[in-house]
Image (cartoon, rainbow over all chains, first blue to last red):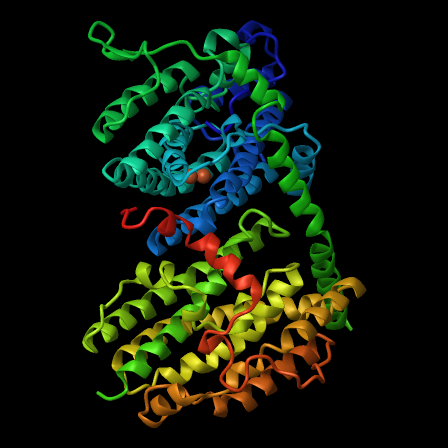
Length: 328
Length: 260
Ligand SMILES: [Fe+2]
Ligand SMILES: [Fe+2]
């Protein structure tokens, strides 16, 4: 998912007895599944947590355009090129909806972008891995968008109205993203030996980072529990990860590709796939900024922002001059 | 039909310009001055790519009808070399800064719209259909690129300087748009091609109007590249073009015959 580790600013979920009357009233609304809207009263911690979560999600959409953008000019057919451009354009649109949703909470898009560029805001760890072959574009659609859907469908029911509504719009597009990715993988898995090798290599490199997208194990975090109580997190990280594995393993089998996990096996008792341990050292390193592409991704975003400053200034100057002329 | 060879060549001209411009616009992904512009540039690129595909489809049919191989869109886009491409020199120019990109778009869009509008009356029914669809998309492109020329021209001192420099630099590639050769003359006579000679005056008027609103000067230079049958339309391209093709065609060249 695109918001992997969201701080809630609490050290324990508050019990009813510890709450102020306002907090109790707020929790009662949440428990009754009444949506919270921008003008409604809300605890500061809820507001701040949502800003962090929605902005992480928005940043992920925008930074996520870079690894895929890396292949737009080299797409192998005109049809694939058109599909990839349409997909990346959707992701930019998702970023816009999400920044707008965050703005309903009293922060501006420019502030949030400044936080990202200053290295103070997170985005999904998955976008800090490189796209080395065309099969990586397939793997991103299939696995990364697939994981995003897992997380985002439940969020359509989350407690904050603008976020829930943004998710509804986004989810409509995500299933097309996943299908186009799987379709790329299918074509390559059924293609020449070289194509099949590219597809397997892509799965080898993207599998574990995709599982890390769901964030740390629930046992690790008090934040998950608070977010669950606020219904801005509907299912736990581990539940979502298990669903993802259960859905994806048969798809890999259909492709004739091997999932790079020797411990992966179907457990008839659990009715789920068992899978091996995730390398959390790698996860935390990437989250902290030490993944293969963190520095490059930020450098490109910052460069684009700085290179665009004169354009934004000119647009503003023109709009002001035009408004002044109309007033005169 | 006696003009099938010319018609095939002309369809490549119609296809290659939007294809190559879409390829250039694709280089902007994730790097535009604002997210809205990123989305809009991709949107324009997507329209142009779609138009190129329609023209290629028709070109392949014409080639087959003439007893040729009837190449599909990917064979035409990915397996021709530099000298076989028929796009205008203007659209292959590197992106430069945002002003360069939008100036290129503006000069092209104004021409593109006039050509497509004329082609809606083509005696080749399929050309008329494709042009009718494309002209609606380009009506939006030309509005948007003109807005940016005005915004940047009449923005800050820096943006004004950059937009003027972009227009000045690209001006030399606009002459080719209104030059006709034997291919186009044959098709103009047959009522199939747009007579671009008749479009130069309206194009100049429109461009001068927008540049005027943008407080920019119409370049005085009359030095034009690609006239006299040695322009992009005849397969004479600039040095940057081979690099563009190398990137665009990489997978099809590296893995011949693979299906993607
Ligand atoms: Fe998205
Ligand atoms: Fe997506």
